[in-house]
Length: 109
Image 1 (cartoon, helix red, strand yellow):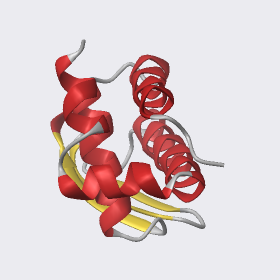
Image 2: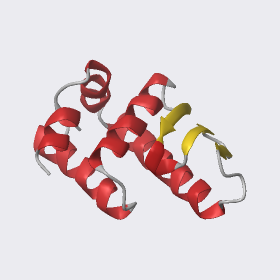
Image 3: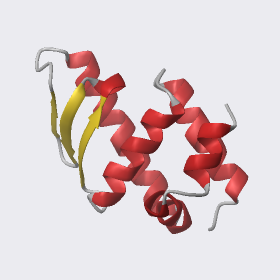
Image 4: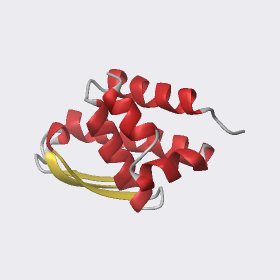
């Protein structure tokens, strides 16, 4: 089932609120997950500890290796983004093009 643009935008806002991070951080992580085809992500997002990696199946690395709370946040966010991206190819396309959901979500806050 395809999601409407407003539903996709709402999902971005919900993730931002749930994980207490900015819309820009959610969008940046979504881009990293899309680049990794939903199974991995390499990122450099200051709100999420800077440089890090995530791989579906359990591997998460963040710059502060002893910050388990941050590792859990990254793992959960990436898992939710993977589900969102797999259920809505149009969302992934918007993220890859750097337009649509991402930019309008970031500017509407």
